[in-house]
Length: 444
Image (tube, rainbow, N blue to C red):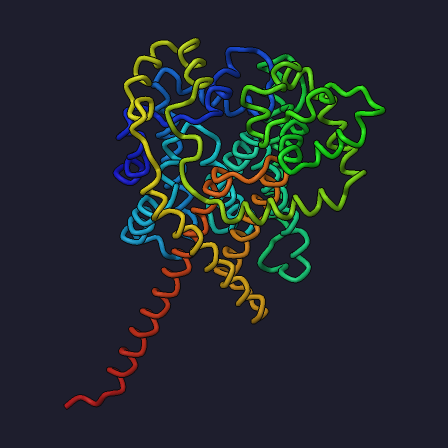
């Protein structure tokens, strides 16, 4: 039990599970009875189940799931001795965002874990028990239901597996790919079911166009569209086109004209039209700004974005619906403003970037040699997940450190697996050489 506790240390130090901007929106799903943009009701239900424990149940489940999936990957690579597992967990706890993600009431921990669970389900399903395979299936489905960006990344990985099977049929069994695809379908069904249960509507979580709109606003596409069309179209934003905020976050979540115009409910149709019509009118600008955003996202991996004391919406939600938890929350170090990630990121950022570069180098080496062993397949999966995450999150929402840090830790984990396998192979070869040498030496 010490390893799960090690991953919960930030929350234990804080005195309460860590909170973020978006946490309140997920907690409120159980109480408000309607759908809001980008807030999964599946994850909201998961948080509701942990309310009576002041959400410590959620953190325990996140810590146990993390240890389970890490050791499952280590097991299929034959580097799962207790000392090796402890080494991996300690290194990840000291050098990556992992313990902070485990300690946070947010979907981000499932973004990275689901990449690994899908990897096990697709490539190594026959190397785990039927019970564990079923658990991996359910975990992947839940993670996919927890956030649309996670679902998109996982769909991309399954799509890549389908395409790569032409060359890697033995490494990518059709049965595993089918299991992975079905897990994602189950996740989509899970989200639709909880949406129906909590809102009475069989509908997908709204908000995709609004989030995409915020990204093209900060890239100047919205201003260009309004300048080109306001003379002949009566758009709600036209009177404010010269006063729009500089960033998408300020537009959606700050005190902006978005509030005056009815937020998502009042602006969804217009935002959708501008996103789609500007894509047709300015495809080159869309492509260039999207590519720039994705590249920038790859470098943004700092831990702790949005985890601070100024969380008015989340605090109000907890105070309104969970007043007993609010009393404990208000005594936490985070609430008092005692939490800073400046020194932490002096370690986390270089470690994340170095790990990403190493994984890219190992993948390039495998491509150059045209040989994909099991380590190369883990490296490729990790690299594709990181690239897919950068494309999905940055293109739709704009680059944020939060999006990078929630996946960067799996690059460090992959590097550790590669190191342990290499070290074990070298140690085994040395032992074998010594045995041969001793056997061939005549006794006196």
